[in-house]
Image 1 (cartoon, rainbow, N blue to C red):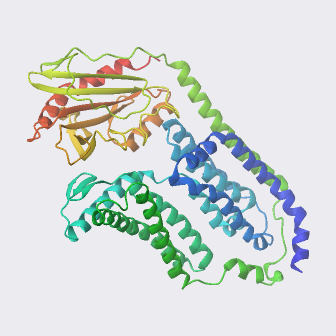
Image 2 (image 1 turned 60 degrees about the horizontal axis):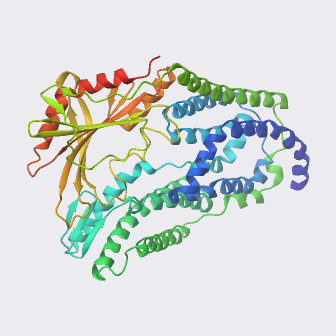
Image 3 (image 1 turned 135 degrees about the vertical axis):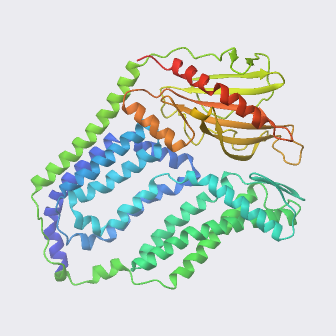
Length: 527
């Protein structure tokens, strides 16, 4: 009988599980800091609070397959040491570059890869979905926020105009006759998207057996929350407009949004359930026990322990390498004093210690040093703000989502536009990220000041605009022992009605970008 076969397999499984348990325990112990960082994000971010459910759901999904798993042989797959080594390298690069998403993604990859390496590919195939489901615990997706905010604003404004309501828009802020509205991060819909995709994927796995139906429903679970969020934003603005701003404002704004989202997801599941198929787990459990064949240990426990020890050594070498690089970097660098801005720059630009044409400052957190000032040439003025970053870690990073031009809920400044602009001389021109800022934040009031801001990163002697390129250069610099000394440079000018300040910015940067490069090179720690 099936019960007799399972009980006979018990001692075999108990012995063969020990190497895997050992490897997983070493993994969680050595990479404890990465795991705790993940849990910290789950705790403080509502966007990723769902991740607390992922590990228990995965374990429950594995438990559902226990009958089928008991019939499969346990056979180690040593060749999985190669992808494990590559993922260890990914974790090391992510740690050096300060990319939490990379290190946390690598941690989950290691957990998933240890299963086939120690227990065999047959076991891994049987629980492939529960293993892949663990990736929902990685707090990723915030890079979608700006794109989805822009899409929500585009749809809302288009729908309002189609409803006959006049709209004046600047960036993510717009005015209708009854009030002033803004699309903030909470309105982006990323929370809805991630939550819908997770539960939609689980629903597809539990209710469908064909890969085609599962993929279709997973795609639907991505499209539906995006469209639903657009409609939610439009309906909230319409409720506020038609009720003279007595409904759908303040706390009601978020409440109505989640209620609407819940109804949409419920309808999506009700429609999807019409095409549900028999439960695969129940079918497997009901299959004749003799059809699966006898339980086989296949490989010897000695080979499993050899693979487990090899995995532990790879993990230990990765951690040792990271610690050595970080220690050598701290010992080999001696901090120099923060540089000062030159009194004179090319093109007749002179530092005016008393000048200040704006109270704006970027929202960059915890720099090692800040250098700022205003240069003037006749009636023209250019502001300079430079933040230096050294010994970067959890509390100090140059490139991170929390470093922004303005605070997320700032009432003094709003960003009304952005793009790219070529700065510097032709032979050494660089593309800088630009943004147009407006003060005050209330669009109903006349702007008291408009600024054009150009932003550049300086990393390992190179000007960089892209966050991705910046992270890669920082990782390579630290890997080669050159340290993490880097900086962000902001050049900003006031804009008039004719936007003449853009020409002033171009002229200033063309003559003096090389001077700022030399300034940062001289301030780099000695080695």
